[in-house]
Figure 1 (cartoon, rainbow, N blue to C red):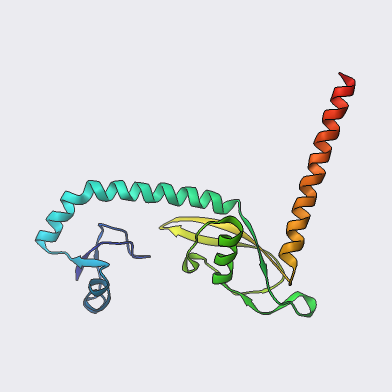
Figure 2 (figure 1 turned 120 degrees about the horizontal axis):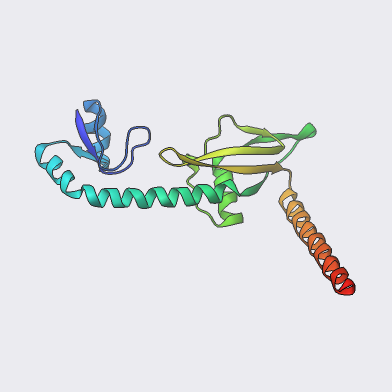
Length: 180
């Protein structure tokens, strides 16, 4: 059965695409959820009239997705978990935990369903986690996993490194003044 998508359907297409799907999938899910409409002559004619608006929205979505991907590529988040002996976690780090950490630390909203954990994170360490943003556009977040108090320690280290860097800059400026 042919339908016209009104929203993105992951793995199938985006707004305005005409796709073939099983009749049951169309009737029981796509049409009921308002994700698609039947591809009748009238609906196809309306689609042609709306094509320019759809392209404009699509370009905007792609631009926003590229910006978000760029942000995510530069993000490091800290996830605290209960750690047992030898750095093995009690449980695992989930996509929801990563999404919450991104929101709390960087104020960037990411849907947990878009975070692609190939396998659960069950040990302490640093992980590169891909985030599918829109269609083929994705970013990679660096996730640092540690025990209780780990995020506070990491934050203190970052502040300490920044203070040391500032001291070096000040010393270089002072040396430049005395030489000049």
